[in-house]
Length: 175
Image (cartoon, rainbow, N blue to C red; front, side, top):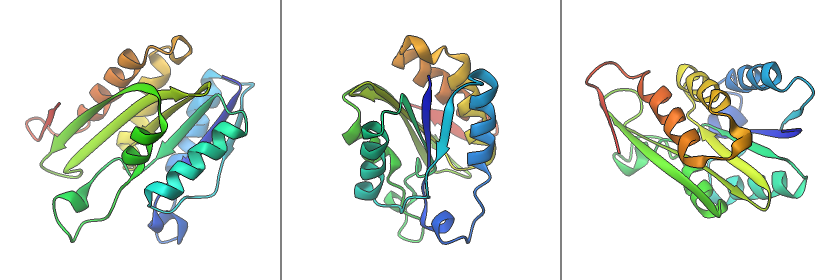
């Protein structure tokens, strides 16, 4: 993996209301494993499926080997109109041509988290949840799963297990 794009998502990140702590952590993790990689964090993307899909397409068009979406893996608005809208997983479902996904249903923090991993036109794409501890667990699991082999089932399983482990015992289920 030589060219990697980190794509933070979220209106709150874009507006500067919430500080993006995940991108530097992800970049650091990537560079520990791939010290010669060109890692670029792009400007935060709005929480719309079209904007996120456009950012993924731009990353692929730039020749990136890997795009990492951060945030927007939940879907709180699907459960309550008072919760934020998240569309990274929707954009990923549309973007990837082969891959897999797993869902985690929780009773605290994320009510629902969907992690997607796949490839399109030579570029692998993954999404990470926004909460720092979940993003950190997921990126570390991704890197440990030998992403060069592009075994999407193994990668996605490892990431979902790592995120699931961040939930208190009995507070979440996997599907």
